Length: 358
Image (cartoon, rainbow, N blue to C red; front, side):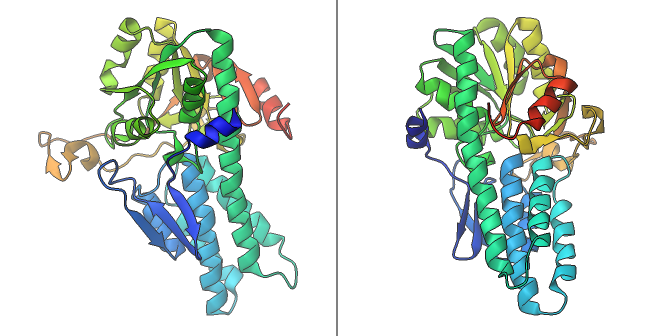
């Protein structure tokens, strides 16, 4: 299966080449594939804020590479470069508030910095750490793809339609994807007949990114308005909703793209199973429940305008870009450490105690 998954991988969004971070500008997809090069932490922080790069794991990876760029600049400038580096950590940590992978990656980089020994080359060591974070995310995705596919296999023996929301594919990760990774693997095994992709207003990640990724992979996909989801569950025989996550609390509550919560409610009403796929770096055990997850609200203009043109009346707009799905609406949580059925606080604690998959 692993070889099949690797052969199916056709999309990537992050590359580290010749000492610079290269990001596929996701604001321009699917019409234009433009790669942008970044050589400073401040520029990467701005790219994260402006959604050149998005998706919780991808944001974390980009931030890790940004720290490498910051180390190079601060060491070159001389003086107390470690103290000066704190400004770069601050800029990066303030770029997006909800996705915990950002803070996880920054903590990994800070901890590695603290372990530097006399004689170490800080730039080389920190670059190795960032490359390792990138590679481990991709490996986690491949593991989750196989685990999630096996869960689907256990629940059904034939090919069925599934639904997904937002983009949790290769564009949102270090490669292959979380939710889309499972969908890809299940399709290769003949378990997914068709994918219904919510358009995901207001940034249209579903229509611009998810549908494009699946089409590139040759997976049958139909795009639908977010508000059509319940109707499609009722009429199209959908058996699974499969989504990613931006932060998961200690009790299993999941923050994901706005609209995920209502999907979970609709799925329960229609007897559709609900699967969340995310690496363990997305789990924030410091937060007791989803009520403590900070929910990012972006400029209302994202709702009032489309491609720079006003499409709404002269009113105010509320634009929360994430919501929280309670754990009791989730059937399966798939991570690289293993699968949790009907997550709760005890099961989450047990999962996070695992050092490796078993």
